[in-house]
Amino acid sequence: MEFNNIQHRLSQLAARCNLMVTLVFGLLLTNVIMGSLAWYTSLHQKVEITPFFGSPGYVKSETAVDAHYLSLMSENFIYSRLNVTPETVMANHKRLLTFIDGKSYSEISAQLSKEALLIKSKKLSSHFEIADIRSDVRGLTTTITGTLKRFVGLRELKSKKLAYTLYYRYSMGRLTLTRFTHAEEKKHA
Image 1 (tube, rainbow, N blue to C red):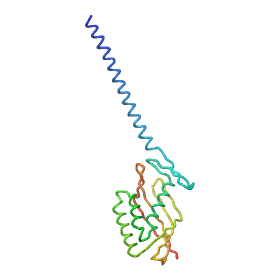
Image 2: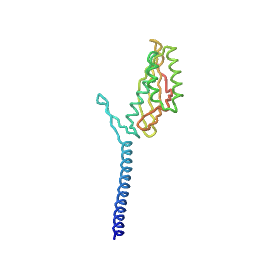
Image 3: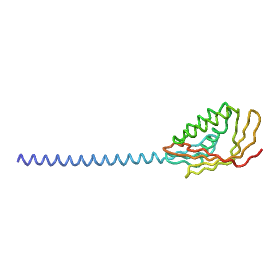
Image 4: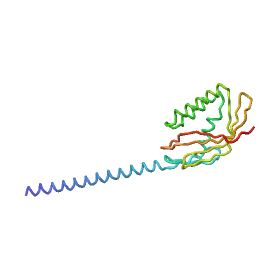
């Protein structure tokens, strides 16, 4: 009789143990699913940002951006590089370098340093007037056309019609510039 009683208690204990293992496994599986869903939604959650003065907003997430965001950032980058004077060139280029991709940093940094030395030594200043901005969200590129006006002191040099193409990398909500190329279109006085 005592043996049956012990066997009955052991079977109850085994049943409770099996129930606990099933519950723990179920909770573990639920945590994995919830964690995966939280990770997925955090990467794909889109945020719309509306600038001041009623201009159209832009949408970005951890994995994608829209054309308006690329256009706004490209405008900032082109102005940082081209709207310079001997006094502001270093600060503008330093600001631009914070957005350069790590793989392209040394090449673009060297190029900007050469430009800054030339601007300072020749006392050049320039101003870029944007005529058109075309952004490609799939290729993460933006092409900007406009007129570059340059000055030596107060003397204006010939204006140049230029087209710039900016190449980007977008990862984990951060836009970085990988290349900044330009092609001369036509000159005008």
